[in-house]
Image (cartoon, rainbow, N blue to C red; front, top):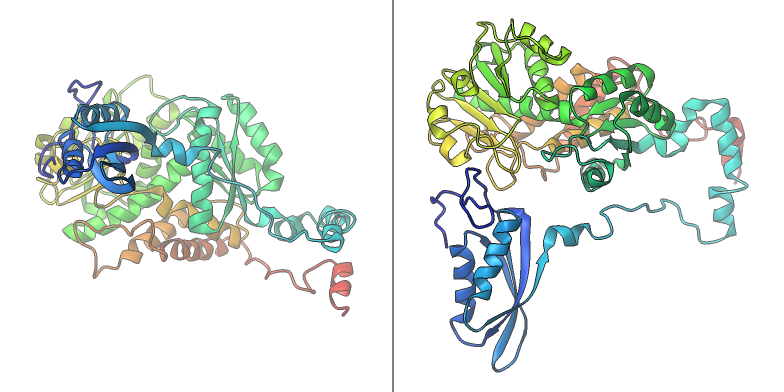
Length: 504
């Protein structure tokens, strides 16, 4: 098997290319194989997989007889082409019969990942009459008389719309609404798993800003919050701003604010590790789209020393022409010395690099030019801006967006707790104060006594994270809005319902 110190494989139909890829559970396959029943056959399988650059994660015996063994071999590969290479290597072995190859990611998505289940039993006419007609009419009338009751008496209390037009799906580009649906389903599943929030995908077959705003405004009565997702910049900025003006529920673009919250949390602890203050550091951000812009605005709000924003044409600086409004704002409010060069030049002497852009933009040699005790957040997924193993040779703290590397910066640390807190507080808007409170809560879950270069953020499965974030957001929200009413009891319900509930 390939040694862990070896460079990650680079594959493209079998030919080496410039993009470095690491094996990942996202490209996990299970191969059903019949082999001869001799002492060395299983070992030959695992050796072949390792030599092909994949990682064996499981090997299960399915069946056997005196002459053969049927096994399921599961391994992580780097991409679809690499998976094909692994299967070809297994097929070429003597005495090996490859029966079936299953892509475990596609298997997980068969039929979708979420469903609707009823919270109430419907076992007889009595229960049906209260859940639906005629009893439900009384609840409808109560809400018509007092629309605020919808937050307490309907799914609005705990439901979020996950809205996308499919124009910026992950790092894949403009794939359209249907292709965005698996991501939105996954988002909804994460809302439920980590925040107890009921979320539902709303994918829109339009990329017209006015139409998106009108559609979301029209469906908003059913929801307690709107989570915008995978909408391309700069349109996402206008869509979010207009919806915030129109709606009385929080509007949150996770690609912007969820990423910014998690980066601020991770940077807070990374700076603690290296003994630097935010006000004293220079930060270079690669990628001035939705995520990068939100990160930079939040860092500026927190008093960062200086930021240089870089995109395809290099550093954004004063005097650069043809900028959209978002980039023009960045050019005017960052880059104190008006640096006008490329990304590699920008990181020279910088304390922090944050990448939310594209793979393999920097090398280990570039990281070596950064300031002493530098911090590198290479968050492009699945392939980061710099090989994390190369970066760790020179930087004091390295983080990525990958689950198979230390210090994974993942938005799931933020958005379930953020919405849980906003829904609990009956918040009408998302604010910067909530973002900062959420970031502090995430950072503090780790604990100053436990942070180190490989532990600057909690695990996404740490059960303390979402409740801590929710509590922090709730507290921040209640400084702006009245505290929510308690769960409806007899005194909270309409008069007719209160009278009925008091009757034995």
